[in-house]
Length: 196
Image (cartoon, rainbow, N blue to C red; front, side, top):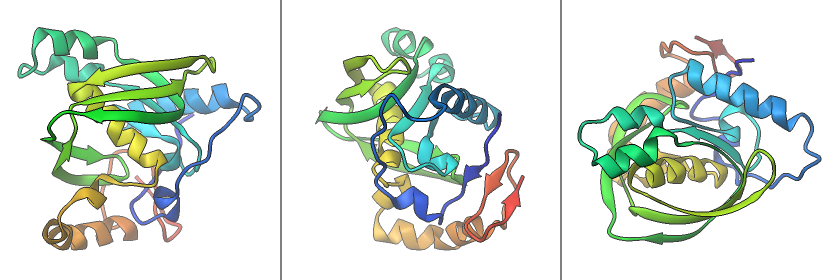
């Protein structure tokens, strides 16, 4: 089932999400719905707060990036089968010199900005079977994980912009909050409007 994606300005996007346990109701159905919602919106990641749930859950399928000609063969290989569910994730280490990459977000349509992030992370998480993992990701894989991880920490990519950049996009962000945008997926706007 495709869920409406919560738009910029909704308070749920600014809340630090709570951990869940094995008794979380209908977890399998929620994960399936999040995949459907993400693919319907042509995204590569989706966090539970983006569908209105302040819980520590996000899904990623970064395989579309594997087609990028600018990547090394090693990076393409890492991204080709990168499809994962992250539950109760904690980034335990970020390493390297920050690098910029143009990021966007399904909750903030038609806004893209260069965001600086560390190139390598170590993360601990549970998968969809609630099995524990500790993994190291680098490059674009690390960046996508960091972006979605920020969502469960109540952080949006626009929060990482300079004050000048924030002022420059303020009007566009206000239009998104008010639902005065056209998107080709279902959204829920802070003022209670639904749109497509």
